[in-house]
Length: 120
Image 1: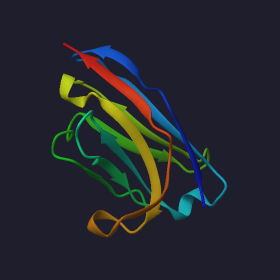
Image 2: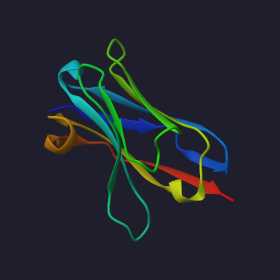
Image 3: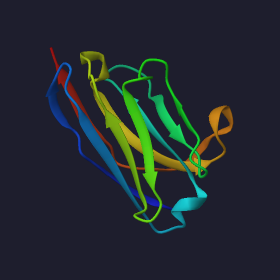
């Protein structure tokens, strides 16, 4: 099982940018589909972006054109570049590792989360 540690969260104003990182260890990173989820207070956790082990990416409609998911397999690290941030992006962000892609994705490991706050 892979261990995941997120970093890079913080507080920004509307229109600002942040880059989240997720460092993986304990297993073969390249085998996994990786994903970012978020959970806002009082809401269910939602999928933000995915990247397959072959580099295919997918995004929630709410972040398309603003967020970019990427992975560096040599560094065992997943990234989420977030631009043009909005107050509705405020949430705890979690990275996950699993198998499958799209509707078949099944997370098997989760990080502890990193908080993102966007103020207006």
